[in-house]
Structures are given as structure tokens and as C-alpha cells.
Length: 497
Image 1: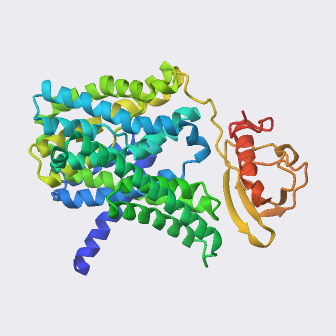
Image 2: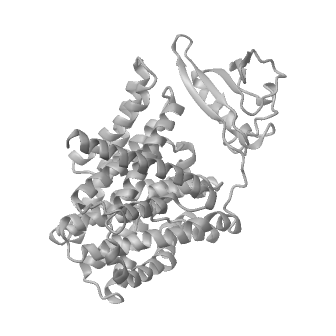
Image 3: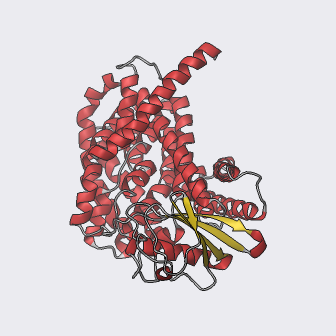
């Protein structure tokens, strides 16, 4: 690539990125999933639109893997372990048992109803089995669900990429037939367990290292943490384990460790994840061929309908029957299984391996991702209220960021009170912070003051709080509880319950 080509590439890339960022605003205003807008933007730029040619499935697969690493890392870093821990078992079951059941149902329908070869039918079921981490993380976090629902869906979407990628690779390369069902199952189990172990260990080592060293600039902490998550993926892949399980669990450990500048790290990860999502969806749109979609449309609608109304509900029931979920919770989990771009990414694997009918399969998956995301995502807020799985809390969390005060073994917590937070109007005394925690500074507009116990907080305020290190977690939990439930919030849980 020479300099003139680079200039053109940067010009087009910057314009696409600006349009994609503006599309976020439009998607929020009109209730449309951003991933659909990005996929359609890629189609508009591709062979049937502006004429940009992109037909390299191997490059697409590599770039898609890189984007998924970043998206899963952001999901792990921004997930609170206290929230997701009660639902982790159900999430693991959905990511394994649920994936297997859904794959089997779609494969049987594909073979006996659509007349597909068993290889293509199994691939059709496998690529549709996982929910999409980007779609779930971005869509469901705007819906005030109960913790049980939101944490179950996030755990599932963070973990189910790993087994399905292993399955699709084994089938696409023919290794599944060579190994046999039992050996292939053991291989999948090894990759998941080994990948999880690598992620947990590397996350713990990384958090221990970052707590014991002082980096010269705050901006290095987010960079270092994201690098550790990428290292987890690379080590997992080098060990022939699941790098995707490793990256998610490493990020989960790091995101829940006592690290300085956690809020800055989460903001950095969120920005990089948005960039990865935009690049991923636009690239997949470029890779698609609209000319092949008419002949795949009927099959796509049929497969999507079976997936949404048959395979997903059955797989949810089988995977969660042991966890005593209410029927309405199972129904919401069934409808909220957003597919998004991950199935399209998985469809690049048989494309890269040259599997027969792989281009047709890619067209089917692309159509289902667009049509059924448009069908499911806008209905989620209404369905959450109808099925009584919405939390009813509409207050925004206070924005918390901490930095270490090593000499006194304490942490300095910076609290920013956004619009909608129920911290507005609460006095310092009414926060009922633990004994030993002090509030030395209040910033309101351009003025600073030392607050007393009767000083009320206001929207837009920034408050500095000094908490002994062993009290930091309970202090942050208390601030979030008051931010969501007001001055009468209880002490148990961030919802004040």
C-alpha cells in the first residue's frame, strides 16, 4: 500500500466511521438495532452499491475473530461478577446444553424439510445456535431487566461463542467425522475447560501485577488490561484450547479486580468495542452478495422461524429446567436470544474451508440475522414489561472511578452524579457510608467546597470519597444502591433490596 492509496483508505474509512457513529443516534431514537444498520451500510458500500469489491473469506474470518476478541473483552470487563454469579450456572447450561439442542433441531429440520446434506444441515444448526455478544451487550443494557434475566443472557452470550466455533471448525474441516462423536465431544470439552482455566489464571496474574506496579501514565492501564485479554486469547489458541472462553473469563476477572482507573478502562474498552462492532458488521455487509439472496430467502425465513419459535424455546427449556425459572422468564430468554453478527461470522468458516453450498449458507444466515433481529429487538422492552421481567428501575447509575492512595492503604473514589440518579437531593449523612469513609471534596460547576453532613447532592456534582481499601467495595455498592433507590435504599444488593 502506497501513500495515495492510504489517503483514500483513510478518507473512506473516516466517512464510514462518522456515518456509523451517527447511526447509533438514529438507532436509539427509532429503536432499531445498530448491527442491522451497519450490515446494511456494508451492503450499500459493496458490489451492489458503491462497488467496493471484497471477496476474501479467509481475511474476513481473521478480522472477524479479532473483532470478537475485543467485543468479548469489553463484555467481560463491564460485567459485575456479583451480578452474574447467581446466573452463571444457567448461562453455562444455555451455552452448552442449549447450543447442542438448538443445533440438533435445526439440523434435523434442515435435512428432512429443506433437503440439505447432513454436513450443511449441521452447519446451519451450529451457526444459528449462539446468541450474539455485541447484540446482547448493547441492546439488553438499555432495558431495565431484573438481574437474573440480564446476567443470564450476558453469561450465555459471553460463553456460547466458544463451543459453537469449535463445532463449526470441526464440521467444516471434516475433523468431526474423523474423530467420531465421542472423541469430538471430548475435544470440545477440553477446549472449553482449558480455555476457561487459561483465562482465569491469566486474569488473576494480570490483576496481581497491575496492583503491585505503578504505571507512569493513567492511559497505560486500559491499554495494559486490553492487552492482557488479547494475550489470554493467544495463549488459549496456542494451547489448542478455546481462546474465546479465555478472553471472556480473563476480562471478567480483570474487570472485577481492585484495579486503579477502572472507570477509564471500561470507557476505553467500550469505545474500542464500538469500533470493532462497526468494522465487523460493515465488513460482513461488504462480504455479502445480494444477488444470491433471492434464492436463499424462502429457506432463510423457514430456518429463522424454526429457530425463533421452536428450537430456541425448546433449548431454553431443556437447559434451564433444573434452575426453576418461571415460564415467563423462559419465554423472555427464548425471545431475547438475539443472533446478530456472530452467526454471520461463523458462516465465514465454511466459506474459508471451501465447503459445498457455503455461499448459499452465508446468504441464509445473513438474511436471518437482519430480518429476525429487526423482529425481535424492538419488541424486547414491551415483552419485558408484559412478562414482568423488567426491574422497574429507571434511575441511572452514578459513575464511579477509583485511584489508589498507597501511603494510607485507601482508595480515592470519584463519583459523578448523572441526570436521573436518585442521589440528587440526598445529603452526605443520608448516604450512610461505612464508618471510616470520608467525603473531603465536592465539585459543583466551577466551584469546589468541603461538604458537611447536611450538604445535599445535585445532578452534575462530582464528589471525592476516601475509603479504606477493605471498605471500597461496600462503599461503591452503597453508592449504587442509593443512586438507584434513593435515600431509603437498604444495604443488601445494589438495588437496595
